[in-house]
Length: 110
Image 1 (cartoon, one colour):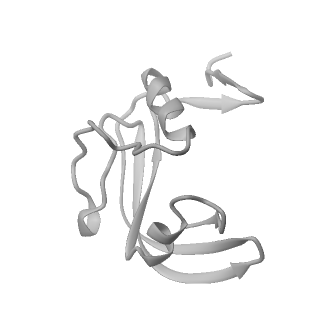
Image 2 (cartoon, rainbow, N blue to C red):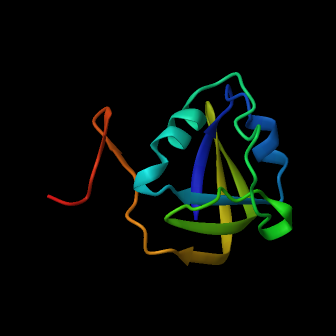
């Protein structure tokens, strides 16, 4: 799995030095948590009780799904670094995912 992080991100150093990371899909009832992590300048994990995942990475509670990876490679992407991870564990809790599309939260249901 891969993703990229901006060199200007306030958590850039944390991710490029990490041995592992997780992708998480929030559930529809986690809009406030999504907004919390969208803001910069604060400790987003303050007050959260998070189970530990692979290599002690924090997993957000009650998410719709997660994917735990170890960092395998990093590539220069100009103003970003591309992180490539090896998938080790994943889960789907069956909860509807939180979807953000065109500036609004929405549902997959029509």
